[in-house]
Amino acid sequence: MEDLKQAILDYVRMEYLEEEDDREVDESTPLISGGIVDSFSMVSLKRFVEKKYDIQIPDADASPEAFDTVDSIVALVERFRGP
Amino acid sequence: MAYSDQARVSYQKELEGIREEGLFKDERYIHAVQDAEIVVEFPIGSSLKTVINMCANNYLGLSGHPEVISAAHEGLDHRGYGMSSVRFICGTQDIHRELEDTLTDFLGTEDTLLFPSCMDANAGVFEAVLNDQDVMIADRLVHASIIDGMRLCKAMNDSYKHSDMGHLEMKLEEHQDRRYRMVITDGVFSMDGDLARLDEIVALAEKYDAMVFVDDSHSTGFIGRTGRGTHEHFDVMGRIDIITTTLGKALGGASGGCVSGRRELVEMCRQRARPYLFSNTVAPVIVSGALRVMEIISGSTERRDKLEENTLYWRKLLTEAGFDIKAGESPIVPVMLYNAKLAQDVATDLYDEGIYAVGFFFPVVPKGQARIRTQLSAAHEKHHLDKAIDAFRKIGEKYGILGLGKKELIEKFGM
Ligand SMILES: Cc1ncc(COP(=O)(O)O)c(C=O)c1O
Image (cartoon, chains in turn green, red):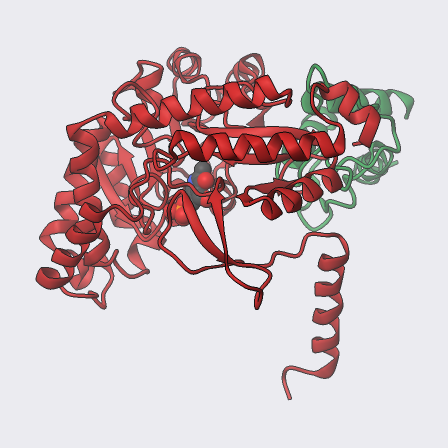
């Protein structure tokens, strides 16, 4: 769980923050509604978790809300990864 | 009744919400030909006001040029008003093909296809040439019409941080398993005015076997020594696979756009691009005017040279006055204010001083990146720019922003 959270956080920071970007991102930072990730580049985030955890998230579940915070992404991944 | 009261009220609420967020767009009525100075009615119903226009894409000052107007008249006389047909049924005149050939020569490509607009060109091109075995890798700041086009295409989409070549290279490596890769970028970015690093993009694309797509809407006609575009500026003419551009900005500013590039890719658009197949042809008047535009800009670099001088002059004036501007060489010069409210207030005050420039803020630009975007034109004379800088200085003093950098501006006004 903590590993999962850390891996997603690391990816978000690497993939979406610019070098001079001094915005703080933690597990509850709104990513999409906060303007850090636009809904279009969200797909690379989806692909990242799908590849890394070997899951398929159906489009219906891959809503901007579900991807809005690292916490909600963790919840989503856990749901599809099963128990 | 299908349009129920409930529907009406909910739309009214939504519109009210847009207004409350300060994002409601009001039109301004212009009672004149597009030019360096225009007569504006704003707000609607108020008395007319002459202002210096610093927000048109009329880069070469050709939108109201007498020769272009007279060529349009000739087109009207000899080829009529409209065609009432899409291109492939009975909407292609000799002059449509002539304009396509002229654009091909000018851009240094293999072939060109006209579209009703560049928005349409971008909406149609990706779907016409890529499928689900491919990947599109776009700069994160590409124009909205490219995003729409990518959404319509079944190829996988991915993006790289704005102008970040290391990130692009990572993505190109990651997607080596796809059939085709296409790197997608604007030539000049419309909000920041910076140029894509096309020399590096082309080198990476060649290294990783990818095609390159450039939307040169804010470049064609003036970027590069003879105005061919960003690819001329970076000396990569002939190495861009698809260029899209518009007739709706520097090239007379009426309407129309095109896909230009590799012969087969352009032909795929002619066969498959939906906005080309299912929307009416560009009107003869516009084609005829655009042909004259191409003649003017192919025959002399006078207009793009004047634009370049104006750009240098304006950038110097703003810098000397103590404004924080985005560095660059394009005639799009953003004056950075960072705070959305400040950008709106400054734009309003400038308008009162007779300068028409627009404030941009989230969601059009990222949060905390609010700005006044100024755009130069070859139609501007020095006295226009001198008058404009007086107004900028006056308003800058009013808000105490002259001489402040990014950090100080954010400290003083917030993001
Ligand atoms: C980069 C870019 N591409 C395409 C377009 C759309 O061009 P057109 O007005 O021809 O649809 C614009 C205009 O806003 C633009 O700025």
